[in-house]
Image 1 (spheres, protein in one colour):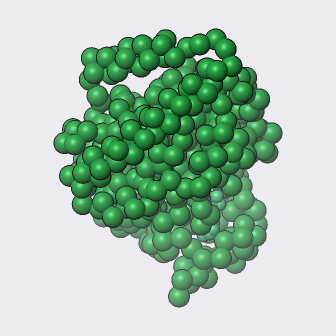
Image 2 (tube, rainbow, N blue to C red):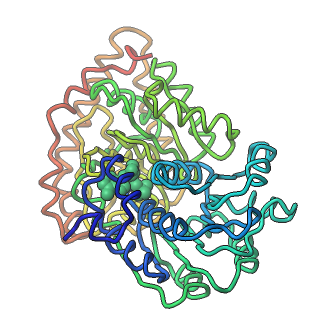
Amino acid sequence: MNNFESLGLSKQLLRSVAEEGYETPTPVQSQSIPPLLSGRDVLGVAQTGTGKTAAFALPVLQVLSRSKPQSKRHIRALVLSPTRELAAQIHERFSAYSEHLDLRHDVIFGGVSQKPQVRKLQRGLDILVATPGRLLDLINQRHVDIRKVEFFVLDEADRMLDMGFIRDLNKILDILPQRRQNLLFSATMPKSIADLAESFLNNAVRVDVSPKELTVDLIEQKIMFVRKSDKRSLLVNIIKEEQVNRAIVFTRTKHGANRLVKQLDQSRIDAAAIHGNKSQGARTKALADFKKGHISILVATDIASRGIDVEGVTHVFNYDLPNDPESYVHRIGRTARAGKSGVAYGFCDDTESGYLISIQRLIGYEIPIDEDHEFHFVRAIPKPGQKPGKVRNNNSSRNRSKSNQNRQQNAKPNSRNRRHRSNQRNSNQSRSNNNSSRRNNHSRSNNNSSRRNNQSRPNNNSSRRKSHSRRSRN
Ligand code: AMP
C-alpha cells in the first residue's frame, strides 16, 4: 500500500507528516525511506520538488531518535548542502518533521557572523545542516566535531561539484568516521558523481526519479522568440496581462538580474534579485519577502536559486535561456511543485537558439512555441540542421546591427511612431506566419515529436499582449 504507515515510520513522525498535510509518499520517499530505515546507503537521482528532503530527513530523525547521544560535542547526523538557501530550507524541514521528537538540529553557512552558530554548536546538536566552507572553518577552529557522525547526507551533489566544492568535500570525507550510513542525492548522474558515489557509498540502493517525468505533465511550457532588447517589454506585458503575482525570473548574470529588478521597478512591478553577490542578509530578506507575497517577482541566477522551494510559484521565466540544458529542468521545476500546475516561459533571442536545441534534446521533445506576441522575432528561431550550443557572435552581431538599423529608420519622435511600430509588427507577424512552414520543417528534422507543434498554436490571452504598447508602459 502506498501510504506513510507502510514505510515503517514512527508514530511521532507520522503525526508530523500528517500535520504537514502529506497524504501519500512521493516516489522518492517510498523508495528511499524503507532501505534507509534498515541501515542501507542510498544513492538518489532526484531534484528538489520531488520530496527528497523528507526522503532523507524522516529516516535520519527516526534512526537518531532510537538512541541517546554519547556526548554533547559530537554531531550525529551531517547534511551537506551546496547553497545557503538550500541549507536553510533543509533545516526548516527538519524543524517541521521533528516537532514531536527530542532532537536538536541547526544550520550553519557562510556570509553571516559565526558567533551565534558557535554558541548553538556549544550547546550540542544531533543534526547539523551545513555548507562545506563554513563547516570546514568551524571544524578547523574546533567548534564542531564530525568524527562520530552516524549519518552523512550529501545533497545536490552535482551542484556541489559544479560550484567547485570537491576539495572541501574530500577534506570532510577524510574526517568522517569509516562506519556510518550514507545518502547521496543528485539531480543528475554524470560520471563525476557516479565516481564520487562509488568512493564513499557502500552497496547503496539506487533510487531514480528522472527529471523528465517531472517536467512534462504539470508544467505548461512555452517558448517565445524575441530580440534581446525586447525581452523586458515582453516580460512586463505577460506579468501584467496574466496578473502574475508569484514568479521567478532567471537571468544568466548577476548584473543582468540587478538591472532587470531596476527596470521592473520602473514599470511598477515589485521585484528583488537573489544571487551570489548579494549579502546573506539581502538574500534572506528577498526570499522572505517573496514567500510572504510582499514582492511578486524574484529575479535569480542559477546558483542562488537552486533548491529554492516556495509554494505557489505560478510562473517561471527563462529570461535568458540557460547554456546548460539541465539548468532548464531545474529552473522550471520551481513551479508546479507538490502536485500544483505552473507555466514556464522561455525567451529565446537569436544568440540562444542553439541552447534551445540542447534543451529540447535533453528533455526529448519540442517545447510549444508561442508566437502570438508583438515582439515575435523570426531570426531567433533555430535554423534547420542547426547545431546545439552557443550561436557564434559574428552572426548575432550582424543581426543586431541590422535590427538597430531598422529601429533607427522607424524611430519617429511623435505619436504616429506607435502605430508605425505596430504596422511593422503586423508585417513581422505575417512574415512569421509565412515562415511557419519552415519552422515546422525544422521541427521535423530536429525532433521526431513534431506532434507537439500542434500545441504551439497561440493561445487567446497572448493576443491581448499586443494591446500593450512599449511607450505606454514606460
Ligand atoms: P523537496 O523536494 O524536498 O524540496 O520538497 C518539495 C515540496 O514538496 C516541499 O514543499 C515539501 O513540503 C512537499 N512535499 C514533500 N513530500 C510531500 C508529500 N508526500 N506530499 C505532499 N507534499 C510533499
